[in-house]
Length: 490
Image 1: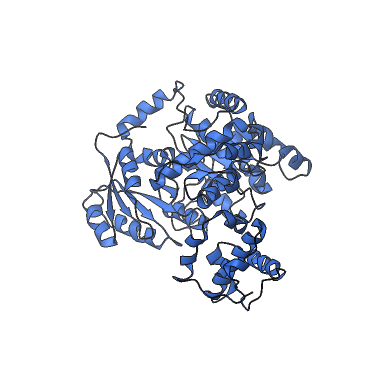
Image 2: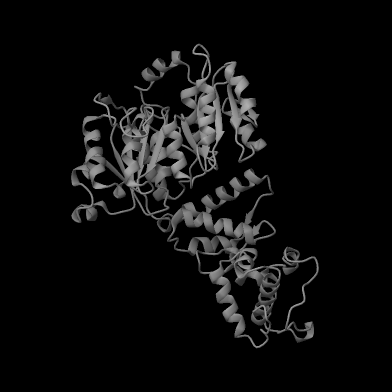
């Protein structure tokens, strides 16, 4: 991307999350000079002096802090430089994300998203000088050299898909991506964006299944000030925010029917009119849609418009499930482990041959998302940075307590007490059951009893054990069937 001669002066205000040194270093590499401030008073002085290009604001459960920052910026003299605002929001706080965009945030980034491509797209409008925008428009007429994001496409099926996607990206056509949930449709959409002539423009995404129906129209198309009660200022919809770039509509099959007709008209005419306005806006946006549904079946059931389907599917790309591209599995695991080491600055992880075979033999109904979960669980269970087959917990087929026979229980004891707590019905070592299965069950019984005695409720005990209350109830019912399971705690 374009890096300015002078670093972008950014003020960082986030009372909810500390900025880690490695993340600040990564932002420096992107051309940002980050100055962390802790209060609005510390923020006010550089804003009034015109010394800031960007203010990065971390939001919690509401937009109160954003409103306060915006008031400081609006109070600046008219002839002073006014910084743009970039917000960081937890992924689950979707309503806060929408409210931040309506309030006037230039961009909203998830708090756990440190991908270079995400930050480049967010910073590009701020970093790029006006004198170079016309030059960019001229250079966009010729195909760019594909600069695909760092993705794992190793299996021959995936490599063919990547090559086809890069060719499709250079054509000015709408693309429909089909594939099961968790297979990586958004990753492929970003590949299409970054390989296209609009790669320098923004990448704006919307999950059509994640928003209430009454908010979606305003979010897509925007509104004018005074269009309805509460519309105190103009709002640019996602189509306008994606001008000169790509709009990614995920789960397009969940779009309500009345919005499907409006979307079809926008795609046909390449113009839109904000709510409360009579002035049409010309659009220059690349459209990529994705779905895990069979839209042909949805059309037959009158849940999806056939004309919209043909408008979106000028070119269709299908991502196969992970079980059909097993050559990608181990490279993905290596990438996940390496990413974890980089984030935690820990020693490298190893994957035993048995674990590799187990990963390749599994069917992966949850696709890449399930693979990420399995790897994260294995890193929690394995204590020596070596992941073996018995550390792999596939979905809900294995309960964490079933692995306790392979763990050092002495490391668990300090969680409850500095000295072993007396338990009713405890047996001397010589009376311990001798079979491996019985020994594991007895150890499990002791740990559960200790947790119950140190907790005020079963819910608290389940939290200490790292299991759900329902699983704890099941374990207690099984333990009552044991001949030596006697005690008031159970």
